[in-house]
Length: 210
Image 1 (cartoon, rainbow, N blue to C red):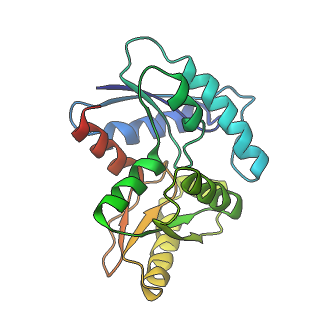
Image 2: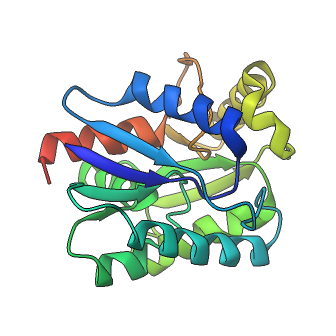
């Protein structure tokens, strides 16, 4: 299975290579992810609602132009930018990372909390969940309050994630979605299962074979 993916931002050659290497590690057997950067006019990070809207437009344009022969497209972002439009307009599947995870959680009867970097991202995640009819599955969105540089700082992100997981456990959550597609996280122990939504989405897609 060959999947054409787009970053949700302009990230540059070095970060694109890091993200591609991550996909090469986590992609299930038989799945190839071909990750492409957005033009340098695209947002560099998601800090406002306007950034989210601009990202969405750039992703729609990029994925609409995916080369012939790919089996599916998706955005390298848990906010599923452009996926609603692309699912209506493309002849191949457009995979939404957030939608896939929340639909799976609903099927299992596992309400899911999430952690994200800032409030605009939290607001956009909530909007997408509600728009998809899956808002009831997403019980809580917690803020890590980290700047964009933390996406590549494993130790800092992991420390904040573990703290958020402990808080989520106290609030009664049992499952926590790590709300950034570009972050590697370590397995955590304790009452809350923290999972990588990208890795899970790819496993579910591979199992379904589109």
